[in-house]
Image (cartoon, rainbow, N blue to C red; front, side):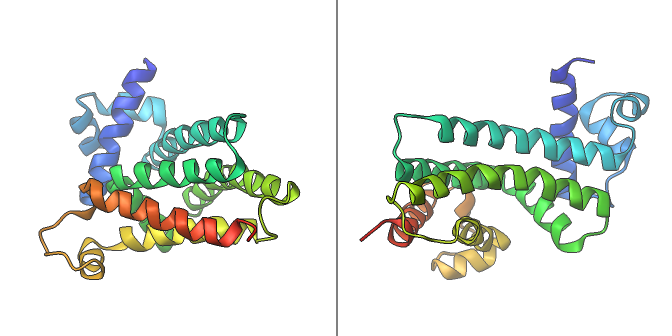
Length: 206
């Protein structure tokens, strides 16, 4: 089975999990959506839990690769790297709001401990990269002595609050019920601008 086929099954699973929830999605549903047979899904992923873990790994590895590129970019200053981190997270999460909702629900409900721990372990690897950028800025005395972990949590917390509910988000920003903030480019830019202002104010020496 090619990697492209695996990716195809993972993407089909992501759509179904977002639409029907993990519990409401069967292996048969997944096979039908991906246009493969049930035996193929079971053979390559073993179980629905393992398919979920593969989906998280696939998405997290993309983000990790991007963050590693940012951290290694010698043409960027530390604050420019933080700006790039903000842009990457906002663009990625808003463009995949269904996936984000699946992960958020899994973390909140903690119904499958192995899956829950797998998600945390994958995300913690990304956190380490961002922490290293902030700590480098502190050592160079470009950044103030902020809390690296909570600085990153401030970025994610803002994005997560916006993503929690479309209706709530629209109420925050005074938009009509049928407005979709997650596909609106001007709103995406608004979040990015706000987070950059927030982080610049927090970390930069004054």
